[in-house]
Length: 289
Image (cartoon, rainbow, N blue to C red):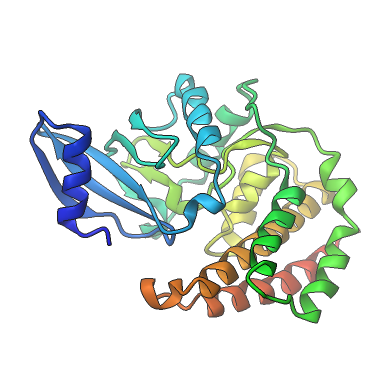
């Protein structure tokens, strides 16, 4: 669908009087297509939204949060954004996404998240995790899916903490601060992709960093705070649990829509792994007094 010629045609429609060159597609990302391009010899990234990706992101809200975050100088500048299509052109950042690195600059990651969390900026939207989860669940129920018994069991256990989680102070959060969304050039670190930004408990962002390994998130938690008490640790494990619930439903949706075959990713296996992780994470919560 998004072959090089098609990508070039879409860019030429946006920039009809400029020279366009498609350099390569960036590795990573299961929902969107992002390319490194040249427009009049200047490098940019060009994001095209993947099939059904707009089911999970409000592009109007994304556009507002991109504008909101610009004053902090923690990300690359967006030069074109369409709230209708989700197409985005941004200045290219030289560097390596952290998921491709062997070691992470935890101090820099903590510092950049603190700049966002302590900015006193407020998004127009709260992340509303529990409403979001219900919406994602309904997407797959409408397609005929029935959540397994073990899902309902562990969800009931998790929802015992709903009031506790929703009582936490809300600040501006990135919302998807996994390692792949940080770019490091050896001197400076930047964070990209604010699709899921909104007001939330700041530990939600720290938990996102556990996307590859739980240990990464725990290391960031202990870097971010001088003292990690049981309250912070519990919130970390609970938010990571929520994220696995969230992405479980997204993965099932993609499987039901036939995207496993199209993208050559076994989304049923991805979903099963998230469900397994939920039980492991909740067992850690039980250990915390």
